[in-house]
Length: 192
Image (cartoon, rainbow, N blue to C red):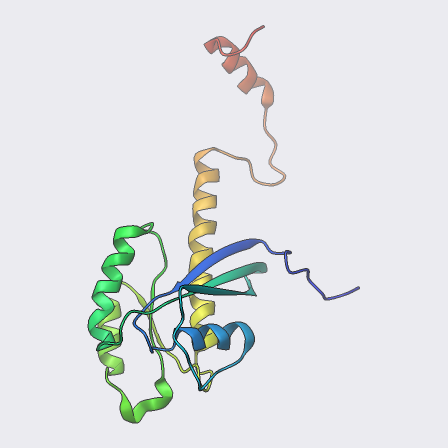
């Protein structure tokens, strides 16, 4: 028996979009997570690029389609987080999972934003927060795994709630179909 899984063999497909200012390491986060590669000669992303990788979450195969967007001009990037969040919240579903990533944690001596400031901002805005280093792979796997797990939990909870709302029987539960059919006939929905 082979342990090989076909590329298209997955239970869920989730889209993850990396956004932020230019030069913060979005492309290297993508390549570190999907190919375990890092490039010191980073070039600006033009347009949008994407890659995929599958993970197991609660015995389900989650295929992540990760989109790397072109950053805007380089600024004091932490100051722009509020603007990025506003754009996200204005243009996406309110149930999205958002994680604030402080990348380049390997450059502690050059840190522009303290861990405490990042955590405080994330708590205030109800975001997940993690510091990563695409260079040495610190927390890259954990950050993506956390985001994908949270998305999976939201999706599976919605599915369970929908099933409860519809009174969908659980596996193995018996239903008395006769009562349902006679009730529909009395309302006049079905011909006798």
